[in-house]
Length: 96
Image 1 (cartoon, rainbow, N blue to C red):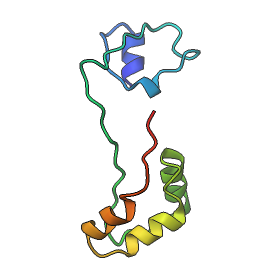
Image 2: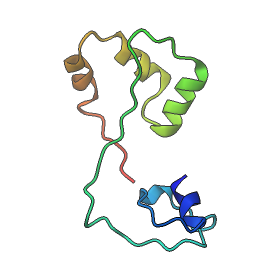
Image 3: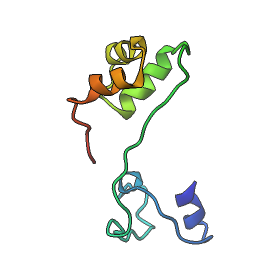
Image 4: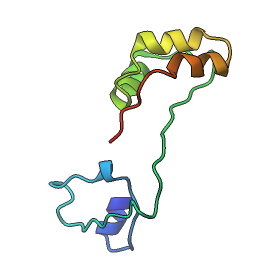
C-alpha cells in the first residue's frame, strides 16, 4: 500500500529494504535510512489451541524457512514461553 500511495504522488513512504524490488519499483527512488532506524525482529503469533491449517503452516515456512511444520508443532506442545524461548535459543535467525 505504501509504495502504491507514493507512486500516486501522495507523499513519501518508509518501508523495509526487502520490500523494494528493483524491477517492479524502477519508478521509485530509494534512500537508505538504516542510520535512522534500528534493526527489528518480526514475530508471527497465533492463539494457543488454534487449529493451524496447511496454508497457515505454508505461510509461516515461506516467511521463516526455519519454522517447519515439525518445529511449529514442537513449540505448540510446550507449556510456557520460557520453554519455547529455550527451544529456539540456539536457532540462528536469518537476517536480510
